[in-house]
Length: 105
Figure 1 (cartoon, rainbow, N blue to C red):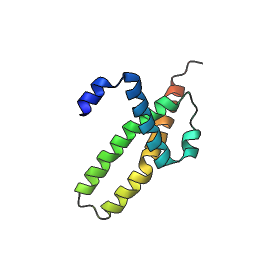
Figure 2 (cartoon, rainbow, N blue to C red):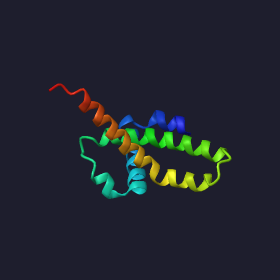
Figure 3 (cartoon, rainbow, N blue to C red):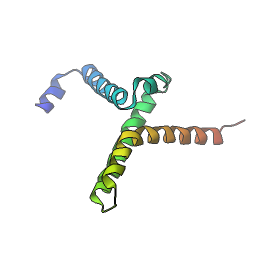
Figure 4 (cartoon, helix red, strand yellow):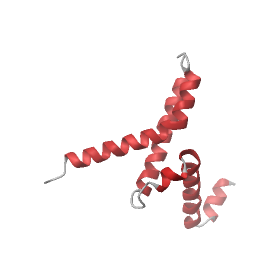
């Protein structure tokens, strides 16, 4: 069914569905205030970074849950509740620092 739907649904509709899904997930998990604080020009890059960091954090959580580390469940919850946003913000700071380090004066 999913394959048929992807073949029959125009690409512009597919993009809209993907965008709406990602936007609602970001707003639900991080809050409207955080999303509103992102400049419109940076929003596509931040959204892509959000997806990347979400996958990265999920991988960390999976590894943590499979381990025998004490408190793994609580640490996993903390990572999932704030780790994605923290990772996105850290990546953005790193990107800005890298960009500024190579700026020609």
